[in-house]
Image (cartoon, rainbow, N blue to C red; front, side):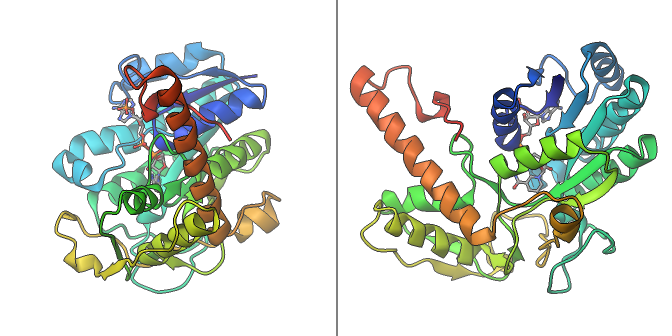
Length: 316
Ligand SMILES: NC(=O)c1ccc[n+]([C@@H]2O[C@H](COP(=O)([O-])OP(=O)(O)OC[C@H]3O[C@@H](n4cnc5c(N)ncnc54)[C@H](OP(=O)(O)O)[C@@H]3O)[C@@H](O)[C@H]2O)c1
């Protein structure tokens, strides 16, 4: 079956592309320039002509500050585009899975939230993503809107978990926010769950994250360093300075504090297993270390010219 993936150059999309190929899909993955999502007509025509049985939208303007700097573009890409994809899928009969975010929640209350929790985004990114959820489901009620959080596990597109370990390996000082909580989620687990959701018949919102005790970025960073010690990359875990969310100077947009999402619907309801947050972090570190070792091997063997860590792809 053919799968059409938007945003296949991004952190999640890259991994979905690989996992879908490994799972036997024929992948169609238009680059940004080939199908700019703010061009609704071109986008609809692309989906209609694609012959895809499954369409997955991993594309977004996912930077909070970027969304605030250009709210119209954020609305066009994060809200209007998925609705156009959904409408086109209604015509073709394709299954549509759209990725959304925990940032549709306001995060004021501690604890995990299920799919029925009230949405009240507190920044432009969250507003555009919430609008995308609503417009997608209005255009195609059978679509799947999968909310993910803190995507990690793609060493070619490092998240804060990989960055923490890389900084520690370089002996740089470490600091992380200790008063904001959610779940890290591996791109590969998202990819496998997305394919399972596409193969099923569920329609609506579903929370797609790891599980366990909600973690702060600081807690994630310390667990990542512990994993690096256990896996032999560091002799001892260096200290990580605790930061307050309100004290991060380059965060110009507000971030919700408590956005850990309940995954009972995904796991118990739809039978799609997800690892715990701790296991997710350990797996991400293992993947990063293997990736770095492979990159070092290649540059030792062939020289570094023309070969950077970014153009090495490891899929598992
Ligand atoms: N990363 C996270 O921690 C996180 C957390 C919660 C939710 N999410 C959601 O998960 C999904 C995937 O996120 P991600 O972090 O993997 O994304 P990402 O790395 O930021 O990648 C975004 C993708 O969208 C493409 N794109 C952006 N603007 C476009 C446009 N105008 N036309 C066509 N393509 C465009 C990008 O292409 P170019 O790079 O070529 O521009 C890239 O392939 C998104 O829906 C995001 O909101 C992510």
